Image (tube, rainbow, N blue to C red; front, side, top):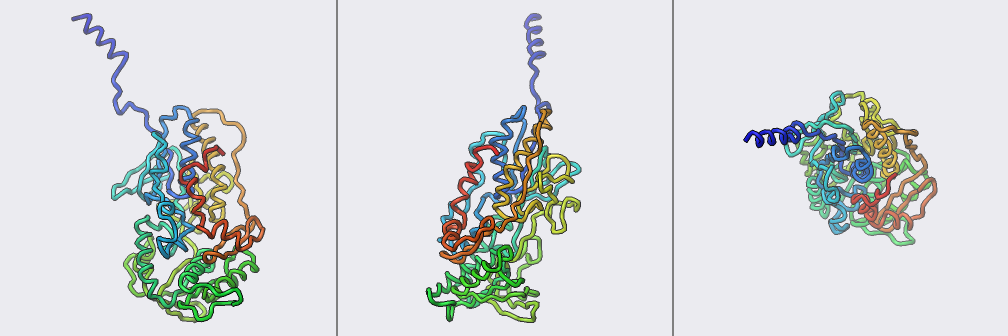
Length: 441
């Protein structure tokens, strides 16, 4: 018995039981935002960065997304008309399915960031009413921006977007007048899609569509539409819009909106409620013009999703995250914090700038994580440089469009070929799945 007791004692001494408190805590790499920037960064980190780190099993990537789905947001001006416009299984893609190949190191939270405490290196996330505080080892802010109309993206989630579309579609057949405020690409694309869908298109030898079935008015604050493109291209856009029955008012802003059926949500951080997209409205412009509309669509600008950032020193004057434009780090927030996409100040908001920045972001994240793990890191940071050349493609209906790429004007048929066919839907499959990022850097 003595020998048996001694044997057991030695066994226990050399192989003590592992208690939960003795397990090594996970180092969380938190990504806020489940769209282009967040999903792209997540695939890069899981595929290329975490496997290269010492003790890689101790790292966990946590992706926080308000929606369970990713979507091709640029497609909204056409998608809002009918589900028949696009294959819905390609337009809305389950985020969880895109990360099934990663058996470990990954966790998806369907929730919303509610508070960032950079002094404590924590971020709070509300998921279905339960708030979780996450200690982050590294943080990427890719929460994007919300539109002033719920028709153009995930201001909340896919359920709210679809409900907004349903309300709009029910009202659309009864509308005799539609007003769209905003002369940028979203406004022009929406006017073009609705004009062709409701009114058809004028013939080859007609400069405009006579007696359109629905009066569609596009209001622009500037002298020209599409201020990021040269005036000659903007004039071409006006020509295409006239052929689908769109009237343009320039140098005017909507000063006041008196709308029927205003919901309590109006004026909250979420913006207009679902019923507001189908409410009649009386618009007062700053040029003393008053316009009645059966449907009113605000399509001007966006609001960065930064309400969870309580430290004003981390924000720019327009409430974007103050980001180092070269390294994509948020320098004022301490080590290993980054921002990318529409929420960030590194570049003008656009998908092509974001995709160009992803390799820079992930290269610098890798450097920082290796250094934090005690590895010698040589060489310089990878540097992002914004491409300021004239680049914008704007479909106008299903067959026309205007735009430029890297300063070169693009003819209408190429606008259709590249973007107008399906509003970039042909590009998103590889991005969501991570195939676009199969090769590092």
